[in-house]
Amino acid sequence: MIIIDGSEGEGGGQVLRYACALALLTGQPFKIENIRGGREKPGLMRQHVTAIEAACVIGGAECSGLAVGSNSISFRPGRITPGSYHFAVGTAGSTGLVLQTVLVPLMMADAPSHLVIEGGTHAMAAPPFEFIERTLLPVINRMGPTVSARLVRHGFYPRGGGRIEIDIVPAPLRPVECIERGAAGPVQATAIVAGVPFDIADRELTAARKVLVDWPAEAFAPRQLPADQGPGNALLIEARFDHVTEVMSAFGKLGVPAERLATTAAKRLAGYVASGAFAGPYLQDQLLLPLALARGGVFTAVKISEHSRTAMSLIERFTGTRFRTSTNGDSNLVEVIA
Image 1 (cartoon, rainbow, N blue to C red):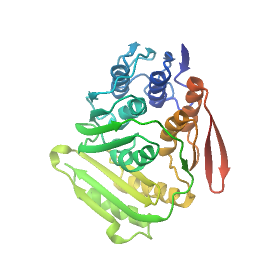
Image 2: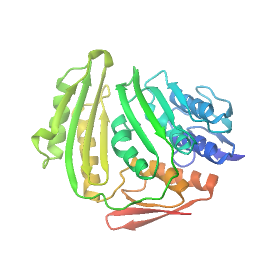
Image 3: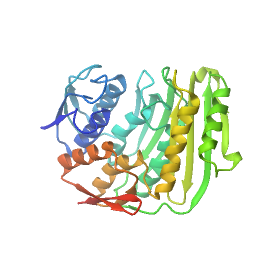
Image 4: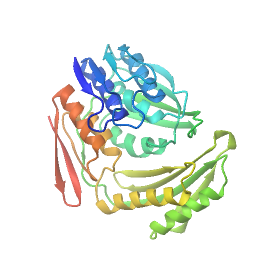
């Protein structure tokens, strides 16, 4: 059994999600202690419990210690079974992070699957739905599987109530090279509001325009959702290239000025564009597992995150596959060493 210290490296929920996926894919059981030991509130939160429960359901796994607040679990995988599944976080916990736990195992199954996941679709500390749909899945689909995603209903913090649907058609994974992102294409900044004052959207877009000064005026647009899907606010800033799309986001938070959130998101997107890298801060760590299973591949990335380094370490422990990182001009190169 592999023993993991959940306080090491990134020290958050990513360790849980990767460990569950790797256990299902390799058949190796694990025990994790000091869960989320690097966080202000350690232990399992509701979204982590749902993610592990989802792994248990699709993988016939047994898990002891699984409860909100738990600091230790033992996980023993079974056989991955494709099918139709419905998972509900019950809070604004991220639907995307639940998906991250089960996506790659179901991509490696022997039949298609359909997932319905309910919870938060646009909440802090997790990529929004648009990142999954427009940034991650196009790269995954280049590797062989066919995965499509649909946003049925937005879900904001703290209410949640969002819904996404995912269809997965498995196929053998093949290595891909993601070095160049290609020529720049359309850009867009969308400020979404639901059940909150509409001027929040205007303030966010005004602040973003002060950073993204070269963008055309028509690239900035507000969007108002029905009040019953709120209260909530999200700013999505998107830059498309021939081979990849990057989506940076910010989410409304009580006590934090809309202008500050928007400025931060816009600067992050501008930094990504200036880097010349293929993978931004969120895409890089989500490419590591499928590339490791493909036994090859390479991509350029912005600064290697602690999330990515933690993922590399876990993948090596479960599979033996290693990664090599190096500097490549203004970006970093990540290679799979099979």
